[in-house]
Length: 441
Image (cartoon, rainbow, N blue to C red; front, top):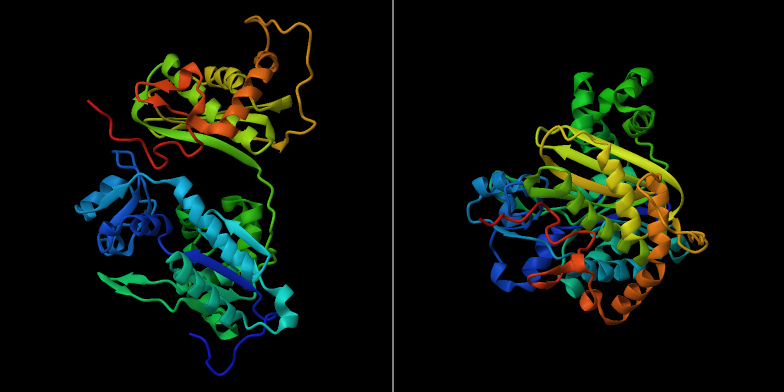
């Protein structure tokens, strides 16, 4: 793909994109050698489950991420579907980032298994970016036993395209090894801009691709000279400007080492859809606990809360409210979330419920001002009741957090966290993050 007679200097190709191969599935196989050579996927096992990661043995059958588990099992009846262990993936991800940091301190994580690297600070050391990529790939294989594809390019757009090109691929039922590292020179840039489909571009998912296709825009080259106004009306002005720039190979995004968190939340797809306000409130209470604990673990508070409701027929409704103080308490969040959900007409059974916190700020200096009279009545506004709950529970909440920090998440439980099997403190990912478990009879 690249000319062997010349290698780029750092300032010509300063950006690396490193993408681990089948990360979740690969970690599961490393931890359980009996899975070696078998088709393995990580995802939800139930009827509404989704595949998050598939081994290359599974991909030979056509299994891929974002596919429903039902379809994956039809394609591959011998598929081993595992529920996912995010604490374990987090351990591998931290070690992955340590190896990246040994190459350059300027790197930007994207999830657990991808990073962008900026090598410009190494220019004075006369580092060969392609050789640096090969060295990093070797260290990942030797020390973590993980494989990856690495793209080397002048900007993020081409680096990400190149990392995908560097990976193994399935053609027919055959696994073809990738190059491992791909450098995008000027000739490769020109060829890709002429031949790639728009679906290959950053941020273009199936829905955006369908909108573009209705405009007759199927290839990247079709985006050149397109009327910006027409494009903006279909995909929005920001995406339109990005696509027009990408079409000529422009991408000015920097590698950002410390990207601020804008929102966090918890969503759940139910094995059996929820019917009625009582069932909805029970699920919201659990989600409020997850979101509140995640906020406090990160020393954050939220000013805006959003409830997302998706019905069995696919229709979706959301409600949001912004308050004048920082929320980080489960009872306070639940009080506000229940009021938001109460404004949604229950047109049918609820398939998915989500609770999202945004307007995030550092917890320091964002405390709720204490008041002498903390009593509330049903006539009070939901945000006032939420505020009162948060103040009332401050000492108890801090004490519970301290015990859990010292002795573990399951060392202390509230009544709602006690189950027949013991203490179950839900996490942001949940026990079944890729879809509900198979319901019991």
